[in-house]
Image 1 (tube, rainbow, N blue to C red):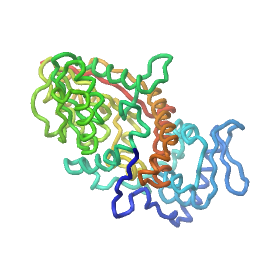
Image 2: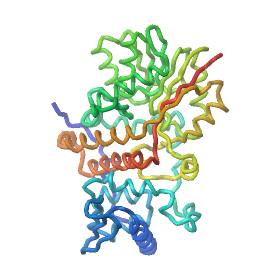
Image 3: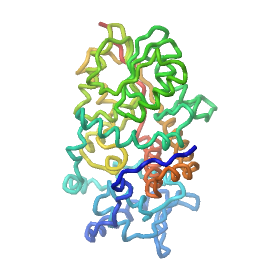
Image 4: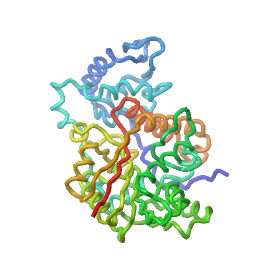
Length: 411
């Protein structure tokens, strides 16, 4: 049965998107740049009044802009916030926003002419200090996203309640099977079996801890999300495995003890670059000699990570405050320079994340009446749809990737 979620007295962030800022000079500049970019993209843009832009044929992804003035004022005022806010406000739409955004993501380093790129530091907003992932800030940032509502996540996740990239078997499009396959793969990397003392950093809703316990491991699982902890404990109890799994509301920095294996799936993105050394040192500190760590991480190109790591974007404001996606190089550098661990194995599967995200978006839209019944607004629907489509485009284009890494502690 669907239950209405009690909303805070003040309007949530997604319902506080105001009218477009008045920025006439920047709006003219943004429109000129947009027209120049889309003239070469394999898309179609339909502006109000009948004007058509883009180099795409009749089957190319379509972007409708029913309010060009508002759209260009938002882009001009702050493009990294404005594109998403314009979608939330209905100032542009698309039958398939992921397909539309993919060509932009494929050319992301060339969208702004090289001669204008030095100007970005004068116009791009920097991340607010309040979003730093200090112990207090990390709890606040995690709660913003993961304590949203277990019921909302249940509408679009599969039965395993796994919120990270699946790993599909050849010839199969079964999301739940692909999630179990991913979990088994990373547990295999960490050597988890009967008697393993396993630390999980980032509980999610308990799927990995459950699977590890089924293998005979004894699991300590850490999370900063009260909602996730509550549901994970309930699922573990229902499976009769409470004696093998201890879910704790605890920061990884406060973890103690020694473990045969440490596993962390897509948690590093919430750590923050300034705390990556501490994160990897914690893996090293908590692993016993001969132990293994296995991490799954979303990655982006190193040069783009360096160029954008202090920039404040739509994703930070509405989805993941304090988040930063690492590069493969930043991970390998931290492992080499900050720990005694040795990276012995790695594997990428970014195309599987694009498929995972499409499953999630289709499920979310199909189940929207259930989400709406929980008390969430149309603004929330468009926010979540844009988030999932924007992420899918990143993986479809190859701009984003996802990796599993195995780290060994030899002494």
